[in-house]
Every structure is written in structure tokens, then in C-alpha cells.
Length: 547
Image 1 (spheres, helix red, strand yellow):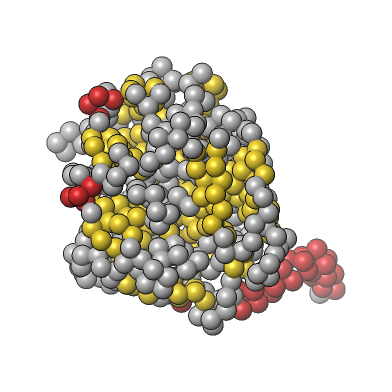
Image 2: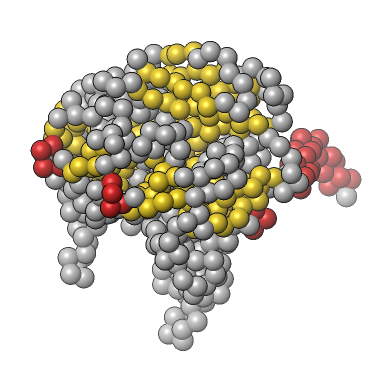
């Protein structure tokens, strides 16, 4: 007995800091305030359906406009405290739809729209778009699934990286295709150069992100893959050549088919990579390096099947779990999900999907203006428990799902993107799906009403822009220092799944900071050059112009 107590004393002495940290974290989560969201009609059609959403400023008025499913455009006519949109699809000259991406491909200062169905809608600057795909030579593969843009060869023009869907060949075994890399030749032509760039691995891609992961001044490409396939991380070697390095960098996912053993079937089971659907960059812990949130649709039911002929669900533990990869600063990542308190769903449960994690996207934004980046995670399937999550970041130490407390009740959608629609300094949320099982599916705009207790929190916005004729600013890293915090965000085109896009104006919450506090802002441009902006104050929209 004495030896047991001696052992316990030693254990407590070595782990007292863990106990103290747990108590402190529990108190922090208990006292934390969640923002409150209200679903608003905002003049949008009641029957508007959405699988993916994009925020863009198509008319240059500084307000985020809304593109739904790549083909319906709504002008933002909101005022502070009231969200209001007007559909302008016809007068803008748009038609069709499909997966899309909004960015300035020709460096003329106006945001254009590119779709996976082979449209390049050039913004002519007067509220209208003209399809110039034919003269640009843009003919993407018929299975184009998800898009992202960035300057991949340093010539100043943003290229297109397009991940492919699978082809089931009339019910036969699926065929997969390598991604396409459409090189932007001075805004005059697009030429597909994926094969010569070394982009040769085939997959079913659902999300593509572009960022200089290893800090060498060249933009790299992360591809989140579905159908139990490893993710890719294409490292840019220069000269429009790439090398796949996801396993070494820690972001391929986990394939561990012998992790567990089933006595019933006398066999091992475990994850076999993932059904990855969405991903996003964010700096979780304010160390200045962008981390990677990966959302998987996870099948992990290994219990009674409910069918007489099967004692266990034959799928086993099929897919890898979703992950929250922390960047160590060198472009090597470690999964911090467990450390950040985001629980794993248990294996088993009642019904075929009860053990599943149905995450279908990831949209990063500071929903509560506390200076720490949060994540909205939609879930798919018309099931009562497939509820979207609002993971609030608690000072880089934990994520806490506060969707219910915030008033967000959605199931069965891929859609999710942030924007301050009404200019009141709080990020609003565009999503879709159903409020409950079997309810009609439709687009949903949640207006952020601020904290439930009425507490005010400051903010600042940074509009990253390239002057007409200047090199693209995509890939720029913006750092905001204030109140002892250093926040880092990327100016990018393409996030979550299907290339969805947040408001292009970067939003930084500042917490409880004095109105006259001085805010330091630096911008690291894609090639590595840095610009320090003049000191700013809370509540400003600061322009970071590339010349």
C-alpha cells in the first residue's frame, strides 16, 4: 500500500501541471462567450439552393457580393445592421454555373470568375462580364471538381490548379485523373502544363489550397483527396516543376489497417487514409505560421450491423479521422486535434452512420472577434445528428463547438464562407442545407449579432490589392500586431471544398482593445518582399496596395 501511495505521489508531482492546465482550460471554456447568429432573408430568393458559395467584390465598392453555385450573382446593398442583396445575374451577363473561382486573372484590377465548366468571365469594369474562355484557350477537363489560383512560377500572373473528380464509367470501377495546372501566360492565354510540371498523380480531389508552405518564396499546392486516397502536397521546386511530399511533411493522412483487432472476425481493422472533402489554412496558435485544418467524411462503424447475416458492419474502420495539423515553422506538420480538445467520434453506435463523422468543409474566420481564428465545419447527409460545427478557438489551446449556443442549426451541406456583409465589424456566415431532418434545403445567411452579453470587441480589416498592371497579390501573408497578439492570414483564392471563398478583405478581431490603440501591419508579398504599413487604429479598413 505504501508503495502504491509513493507511486501516486510521484505521478501527481509529474502531472500537476496537466491537472492545473485542465482546470484552467475548463474554466476558460465555461466563461467564454459565443457570438449570436440570426438567419436573415436579406432579399434573397426563398428557394435559392447552394452547394458552394463565393464572396467577391465584383463592382469595386468595397462590399462583399455573393456568387452562388458559380452562376448566380447577388450585389450587396447592405447597410450597417441590415443585410440586403439584389440579384444581378442577367444584367451582369452571367449564365451557367458549376464549381468556380473568383480572382483577377489578367491583373487589370477587376475580379473575374472562372468555372470548371470552361467559362472565363472577364470583368469589364462596368458591372458586366464577358466569356473569353475561347480566346484564352481554356478548356478544362470535364471532371474538374475544385479550383485554386496562385502565381506558381513567379511571373506575376496567377495560374489555375484544378483537382479532378472520379469517373464511374456507367457503374464500373472508377477512373481517376491527375490535376490540371493551367499556366497563365500574361493574362492572354491559358496553357495546360500539369504533366510537364510533374503533376502526375491521379486522385479524386475535393479541395485545393495554395501557400508557400516551406517559406522558400515559391507557392506550393495542397490537395485534399477523397475515396481513401492520401492527400498530396506539391512542393514548388521552381521553373514550374513540383515534387509530391505529403508523407514527409505529415499531411498525407493515416493508413493504419491493423490499428485494431476484431475477435469476432479474427481480423485487424483501422483507417485507410481519408474521405477528405474540405481544408483551410489558419494560424491556430499565433506563432506566425499557417496551420492546416482537414475535414474528412469518416466512416468508422465497427459494431452490430442490425442485419441477421452480419454480426459486424462489413465496412470496418474505413477512413482516417479529420485532422488539425500544426505547422512547426519549417513546413512539417503534426496533428494537434486531440491536444486541442476536438473529440473523436467513438467506433460503433446504433445504425449505419452513427459512428460517422460527416465533416464536409472548413471555413476559417474570427467569429467572436477575440483575435483567435475559428472554424465553421458543415456536415453532409439528411441525418439529425449531421449538424454543422462552429469551433471557437480558445486562445490557441482548444477548440469548443458552440454552434448550438450561437444559434447555428444546419445539416446536410458543403457550403460555408465568411464575410462582414453589413459592415458592422462582425463576420457573417453564408451556408446552406436544412434546419432539421427532411426540411427543404436552401441557402442560409446568418447575420452575426455580436456577443450574447452585448460586449463590444474591436476589429480591423486589411484589403490586399494589386494596382492595375501590377503582379498578382495572391499568396500574400498579412500579419497584424496589437494587444500582445500577432495574427497571421493569407490572401488567397480558393478554400474549403469546391474552391469556396471568404470575403477577400481580411478581417482581424482585436478583442477588448482601446479605441486609440496602435496596430502594426506588415505584408509579405508572394516573392518574399515585405511592406510595413503606417500605424493603424481599430475599426479601420486598411488598404495594402502592391506597386
